[in-house]
Image 1 (cartoon, helix red, strand yellow):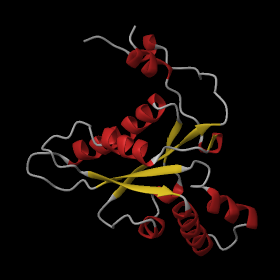
Image 2 (image 1 turned 180 degrees about the vertical axis):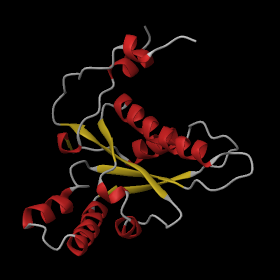
Image 3 (image 1 turned 30 degrees about the vertical axis):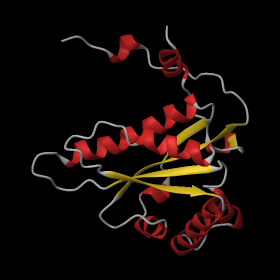
Length: 187
């Protein structure tokens, strides 16, 4: 079995709070984004874009989440507010994948959205191949227009996911995977 197949068979998400420094170097980040953009893209529309959160940008994003959380949940406890502040700070790198899917005469918006989802999967695989841990998550703010606007997502765009990338604090055991006899049928 070749290395690529072994990697795919063993890939496992690492929760954001299981990630730490170091994160990808600038050259590795360029490679990650290049791989993320090498997805099926019917019509060559590039119906997605990336927002990179690193360094102080993660803290500024946390403040956006705090401001939105305070406005929408005035009864939030100080601990809940602090949790919002930290959401994008566990991993040294977070890449938001944003769908720019739009009406098109030949390519359905669903196909465009799925192309953006493939960007997330490519990021996970590429990060793992580089020796990093990664996790694709959304959370409440991926669906909150005020939070999205504060994070730089336009009104006509959708957030497909935040991919957190960094060194693993520890290697996780694999989790149970679906039994193929329960999910595969033949036609």
